[in-house]
Image (cartoon, rainbow, N blue to C red; front, side):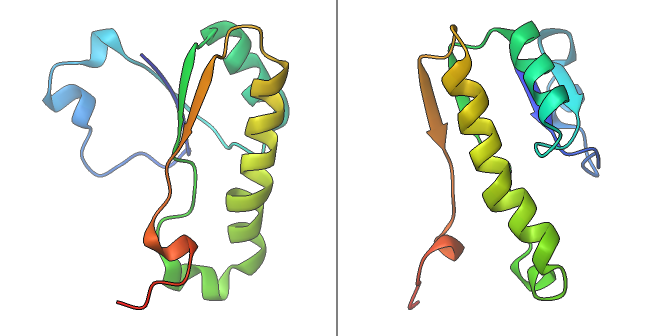
Length: 105
């Protein structure tokens, strides 16, 4: 398994706690860095991709409009463009939340 994720590490490393570190290559970078994203895709040669790259805390987006837009919108465009050019990618699963659309709950 290969992971390309934001530079900020989580407070707990689930890979280590579940003894998966040897099976996972975890690359910490920014999806808006097209060159590094391209290099990672070329070295990983993924067939199946789970896209979960988005800023998580909606309240923070109120103060950081540009960063939120860059990560959430420009990021997915970059990712889709890179995977479109990849010979190995067969499927992409884009994961989102109820915050992406009007949730009346």
